[in-house]
Amino acid sequence: MLPVAELVRFALGPGGEIVPDIDAKAPGRGVWIGFSIEAVEQAAQKNVFARSLKQPVKVPQDLAQITKTRLEQRVMGALGLARKAGQLQTGATRVKSAIAGETVIALLTASDAAPDGRRKMAVALRSSAQEQQVPHYDILTSAQLGLALGQENVIHAALTVGAAANSALLRVKNLSRYLAPANETRRKIDD
Image 1 (spheres, rainbow, N blue to C red):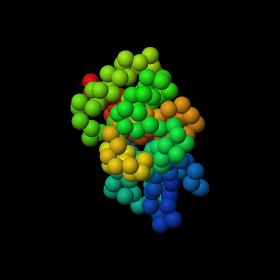
Image 2 (cartoon, rainbow, N blue to C red):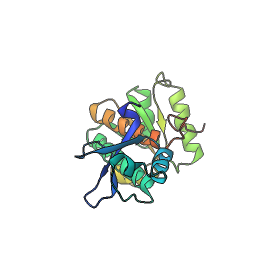
Image 3 (spheres, rainbow, N blue to C red):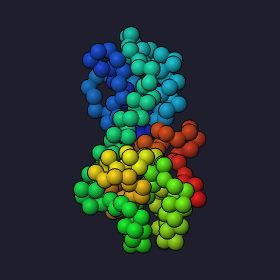
Image 4 (spheres, rainbow, N blue to C red):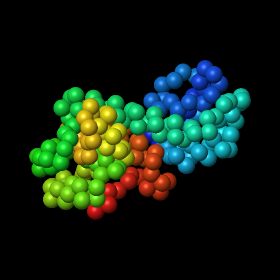
């Protein structure tokens, strides 16, 4: 009943267990569930997968967490590609320069960043002409951002105009939507 963009697909693995099919490319029948942790947890509890596939299946107890991990891996891979394409800036100074140059399509702040650093990026964004158009996400830790970008402790990153950055932004939006409560479309940064 929902558009595919608002659903996540699960497929039957070779061992008879349900696995997240994040890119919706696995062969065979699949089960489409609402794109949120709550929806996946409810589907696992209510035995939706076995009923939909009309056969017994093994559902991992931590299926919602496995799905989150796969989404994070996809985001981290896409961020690494955007960096290689020169469409991602890291560090407060470079990010502020990108904001001033109005080439930023999204800001990423580590979820474990200090409140002062978050506030400084929010102020820099507010002072630019792009404020209303640039989403600001805090869905990965500094360690995850650092791992994705091959650097240590990345706190601030900015995706800039380009195809690789657009792809990364799509994956960031998907992860954000998955993590957000059902009535919230993305996590907001505290000012």
